[in-house]
Length: 379
Image (cartoon, rainbow, N blue to C red; front, side):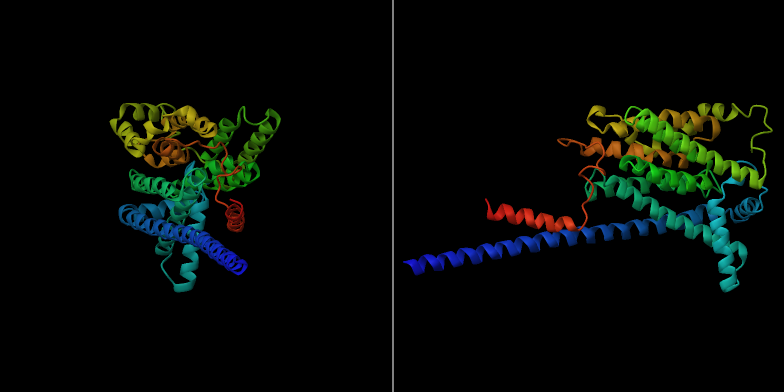
């Protein structure tokens, strides 16, 4: 009888060890599946970036090759009007690629620079979509985040209309996505570095400071908030002022118009194309972003205050039917719209990157195995 009891105990122990081994294998398999899924998503986003770059080449680069080359030369030669003369980051990178291609293969400089712009656009689109996918993962599961990223990717062809040479716009999407991510993650120091690089791309990087202020008023103590805002503002003034000092005080493109301060506003308000383009860009996302407000994170709801400021600036300074400007609003509108779609029965954490909702590092799998094993042996 004792032998039978001992034999049964060994069988139970062996069965328990087998179950634990299966549990560990299942957890490791899930981890590998998640990493594989992420890699596949990146492949999808890169393929989309290549397709969009090819569309841009067919719609913009090829038909406007001559005038694009002239615009590029005017920036490199510091003869362009303001504000284009000071948007140097992408043109200088394209010039470097063109010169390297000419040195390496004796390629015509114009073709080399054109290839440089295409390469930069593809890499920037891929970086922007990948960053946006990671940003949405602060709140959403992988496939939900991918849906939001594909929504943005589907709108990107609309940003290729009504212009012939605006290489800064796609990089603005990267800047504002990364900026919102740093705000959510509470990384004001890295935000300063982003401000410095973004100002070399476009002077509208100053709007990042406005978003930072809106998101932190009442959530950060007044003294550190004023300190960071002063530092950001000073860095913007120093960099942009240095660009104007180094390359000369160019006149603005609309400076000679008698109605320079009002004609953009009147044109935007009286042209049906402006309203249609704005409505089409986010579509129902505009409405979804403002639904169920109190259930969504306060930080994102605060960021919505930037939307009327955005329109006030661009209605006066730009043609709003050039919807590439709306890329700056994607990190605000899209997550809020997704929360309305997937929010039933869910509670959204305020700063998920800082708290618990950020994807755990690989070591957490060991912790998961330990906790599951503990529950298995102590149930």
